[in-house]
Length: 80
Image (cartoon, rainbow, N blue to C red; front, side):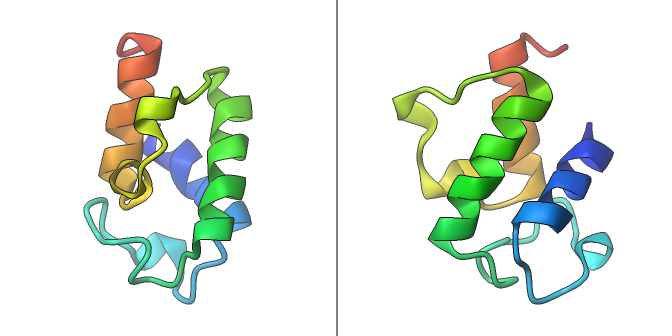
């Protein structure tokens, strides 16, 4: 799952650094992701994983790291 998240992040995150060099728990906003890019990332994740992020998950902390994104997707998919 992390590889898929990284691939989507590379395409939509508009990061100032190489996605491959980012630790799973690194702050993506500190790496250059803007709030606009996080919306694009969220939409791409929804399409790739066939999920919809509920309002309660539309928080900066959910999208601030690869680990937090993975945890949210696992919650939405039942760990699948």
